[in-house]
Image 1 (cartoon, rainbow, N blue to C red):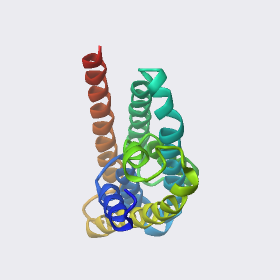
Image 2: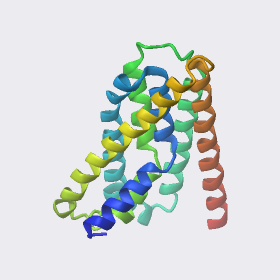
Image 3: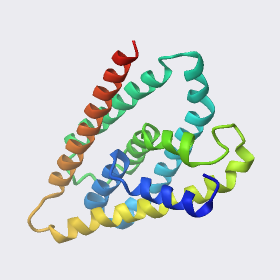
Image 4: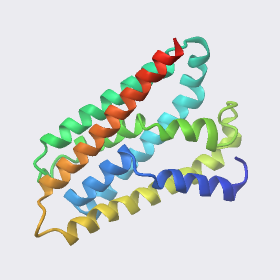
Length: 200
């Protein structure tokens, strides 16, 4: 997808799709507020870039030689989502001092986000062929869009919290985020198992 307009449109559309990373960012926006959540976005960016690099240059090659590599990676991603859901469910929604832990959660959830696979193998040009220098300008623009749309999701979470501040406690937002992450974990696990069984 070398056309810049097509690349930008596809990237923005994919990043706006609700998923585990956006869920976690919006939930933190509701609990911590916009300013504190913006400080978590570098963790999202690092998670995406590392995952995209792993898929494009590592796991993609491994899958050609080890049939179960992608399945193992998907099951590991499901486990990470489950752990993050449990941690979020156990949060009381008032833990303002857990910035490092929240950054770690966002990093690992994003690292396992299936969107990274789509970016690596479909959207970012040249990367699948291992031509990193040619892909670099697209990765830089992708990084800008990741942070910008992450900020939008932060504002969405913070805005919802402001609207319902008197009626809904921060604990509710933590529980709601945990339920959504649990859904993504179960969905990824089930679809991976079904794919593995059909591949036998």
